Length: 118
Image: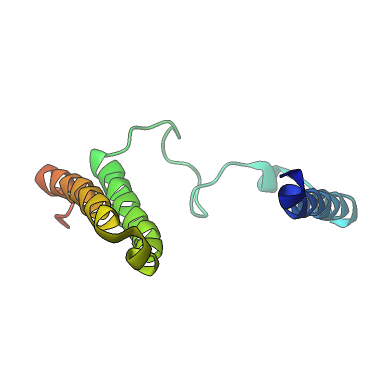
C-alpha cells in the first residue's frame, strides 16, 4: 500500500524543494532597498482613511456564501454526471439531496437581500 503513495510523496518533496529554492533565490538575488515610502501603509494608492479593523457589511459575507454555494455545485456535479451510470438511483437521490441543501442556502441568501444590487 505504501508503494501506491510513493509518487505522491516524491511529488510533494520535489514541490517543497522547488518552492523553497525559488523563495531563497528570490530573497538573495532580488533587490532590497526599503525606504519610508515603500514601508508606509496604503489603500489603493492612497493613504489609509480608516482603521483596517473596521466592520464589513453583512452583504459581503452573503456574496461569499453565494460564491461557495455555486462553486461547490460545479465541483460536485461534474464527477457525479460522469459516474451516474455506476451510482444509479442511489447516486441520483444523494445528489438531489445535496442540490436541495444548496437551494436552501440560495433561498436564505435571497431572503437576506444578498441578490439585490443597490
